[in-house]
Amino acid sequence: PASDEGPVLPELTLKLSLIEGRNLVGVAGAGASFTASVACTVRGETIQSTPVPMADGVHTFGKEEQLVLPLDAVLVNELVAQPIELSFYQHEAKGNHTTLVGTSLLHLDPLLAEASMQEVLPVTRSALVPPPPAPPAPREEGEGEEEGAPAPDVAQESEGSIAVSVELNRALVDEEDHDIDEGMLRTLHVSLDKMYNLPSKWVLGPEQLEEEHPFAYTAKVTVPLPNGREYPIFFPGGTLRRPPPSGAPGEEQGAGELAEQAAALALTAGADGAPAGAPDATPPSDQYIEWPADRAGRVILPGA
Image 1 (tube, rainbow, N blue to C red):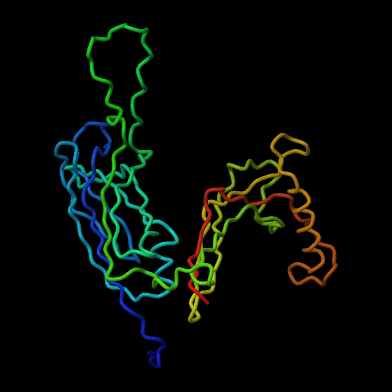
Image 2 (image 1 turned 60 degrees about the vertical axis):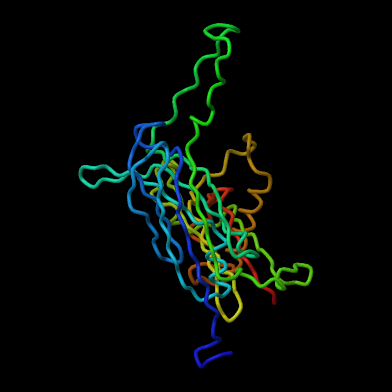
């Protein structure tokens, strides 16, 4: 059914449970007790537990949050295309001070076909938390060992884990829409490599180092979805680079040719309103913006 404002969307009920953290590492290092909370953001809604103390290596968060959301292709992508980041904070008794001590990534892909999931996620240590102590130097066979001594507990060096569960009133995608062979549910993967033919105002000066450039660059790719909706993919972390010297080790084959082609295209099309083919007072730079290789994005595309 549809109204004057467009089709009536079904409602999705989502219940997120932040259950507990085990062996989380605080500022004082592994094994030290501290008070912690966990937080994440879903569809712009911040979900955060109250701070709880550690007991026998466990933080029992017990946080449940229920959201009711209109289910469409945009929501499916907001939940699945990118993982939800869980952040863990250490709370100090004095001054209400908090420190980010770790993060986890929750991938909701199973919810495309299922209505519930439960995961135990590894925790990535924050740069603010001291690194674990270096392992002891290897000992000679028999040195300092007692007969029947237990093997070292490797789990003590773990950065911890978080148990979470998600329950829906229905799967995100109808079962009949999962048949990829019939042209239904598809996944589009998008990645960025480099951007050439930069404006002269963007490039480094002759004596300026790459690390002195004051800006980082974010690119946005917009993918059309049904009902006139769009889903944006953002690529942060782009950095300005100079090409390596000709013939230098690690120079990517074809990078120079791409820069020359981009420059030729700019001269053909004209720049800053100049007629096509007019000479440019500032020749195109061979500098470029490069994005991290691990920043690929994806979009879930429903059936046509």
